[in-house]
Length: 394
Image 1 (cartoon, rainbow, N blue to C red):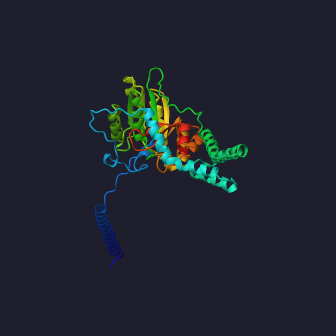
Image 2: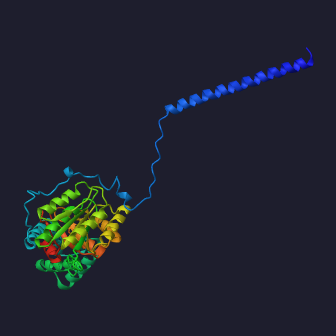
Image 3: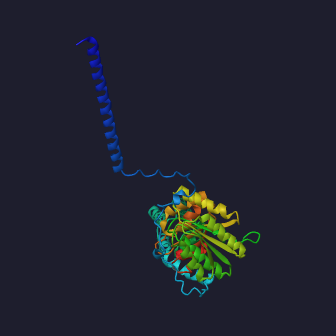
């Protein structure tokens, strides 16, 4: 075979080999594409990426919140009876007499224990240590306890002590510690013809909504025109509960949709109060843990929005008296976020320790203005230092 023929043969064979390689590559690529498509078809569709939104005040208010949402069926409402029947709340004087008797029954052990210790024949160091222990376990607080014991020591040493004298000394020093000079009146006179606005705040479970309802009864008994604002939009039953309280004494409740903006509802309530020429607007707010920054910011927002319509005259912080020193921590944080003007101690009957009155006032420099002493509709009364101490010692 000549050289030209050999070159031609080799060229043809190389061309065939190249074509074969290209065909193999194409077939392989097509097969891979089919397999890839099949695999993709078998995989679940990817979920779209969540839409990112800018964080805002109150983000902590979304689920999960401090406590699970309670429905109307889970909430104990006051007995409304026929909606057409308007109740006449009990007078302030009759309520105070009854509540003092109840307080004496529930808190008397503290006074009796102190009197028994002071009336000992010999008041040695052990006796004074027992007095300190009694006061501290009653939630009086360490600093107020030390101050009281020091004053008692001085007076007992100078004046001597007998049964009646011990009671007199203890009464006078306890009254001084509770501080009767604090202004405990509720500011219920609005400025320039506007209604007084009372904002009620606190953590979950302290009894804010019930307190607002009971306070409405107190004011109606004083012939005041009251409007209620249901700004607790997180708890499903809160607005229904508050409206039921209002219906019992003929008071209008301004409410909004569940999950609505609490500041907007509070503002609407104040505007309604202005239109009706009401004397007082009481605004109930959602319970919030003092550790939740977003919720506490939300509370400040509610107050700021209200003040676009009228000045907030009172901010009442509701504290469960049975929580003891934890109640002090809550009060301290609330006072940092919003200007608390008065305290309401609920559940002061039963297992509550009366010393919390002294401790929380000393901590905040804010007076206890109202106390709740039971589950009854009229079991809320103004706080009086002398009557409180007398009830302890009765």
